[in-house]
Length: 352
Ligand SMILES: [Fe+2]
Image 1 (tube, rainbow, N blue to C red):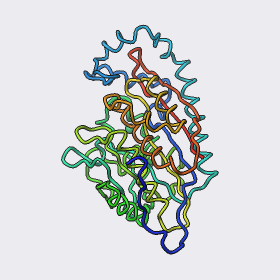
Image 2 (tube, helix red, strand yellow; image 1 turned 90 degrees about the horizontal axis):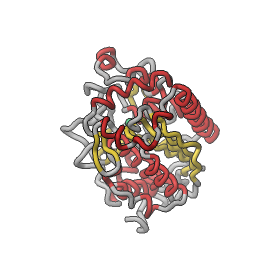
Image 3 (cartoon, helix red, strand yellow; image 1 turned 90 degrees about the vertical axis):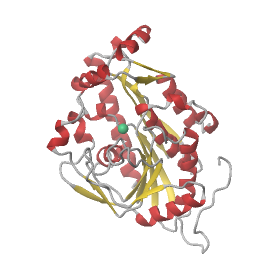
Image 4 (cartoon, rainbow, N blue to C red; image 1 turned 180 degrees about the horizontal axis):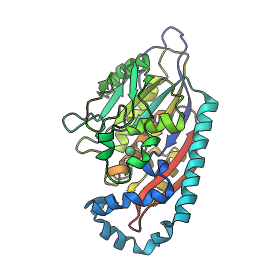
């Protein structure tokens, strides 16, 4: 679809149309809401995982340590380094929050993913548009906290509010977007209510909760959550498809008959739970150069596990490509937590 003209609805009566005024990309890993002296907690889970995807293969933790022995990663896992990196991440997040509040968009489109928080194996859409009028966001229950893997409970405040909350969706834009997407070759799933019965469920998933809490600082503007199944085989959309999905979302936003200003926010990534800084730099450089051929040429095998959330940035880049806004990298901070190179590489960017 890249290069084809996408049809939007509306714009037939000289009415005012919505305008994209801001883009934001943010990582959302647990280390961003975990004190640095606790970053090591997740290493237990890293050691227990038998199949860490990294580059074109999978490895045990011990195999990763051997494979990456030449990178001197032990120098990355001192408390001093962790504190400096944590501070740099906090500075970058504050910068994104400042920009968001200075621009004051009327509504937001958030490109995120679900990690078995809402969608389970019995029903998992490749793309899903939330077009409901209310978004439920709530803290994890005590039972949920007790069943969390190591190092997650400590980070929950970064994603979940202290009490049950409800935010406004944008059903008008959501409906319009679904119709546009269907016309433009994306037969999307839809949801008009955040299901609240799933075992791990705390309302809207953490990809979105992180944005509400850390970027919007709880002053949540009406928003349309867009779900891409980046994580779970077999129906993960390719990077190329995510980019084209973004282009189709762009056509929908800019043909929405509304005087609203719109922010586009990508949540997730970059490489984790094994950091691949070479891949991250390649993605970020391609995005900054608007080199979408390069961006979508990266082999799919590299986008597995948490690294797959990079596709939320690629989808957002598809929305923002024709917006006239320019990407600026605020920071890129590979937050290693073990000598195997596990951790999360954090990236923060704006499009203005
Ligand atoms: Fe995530």
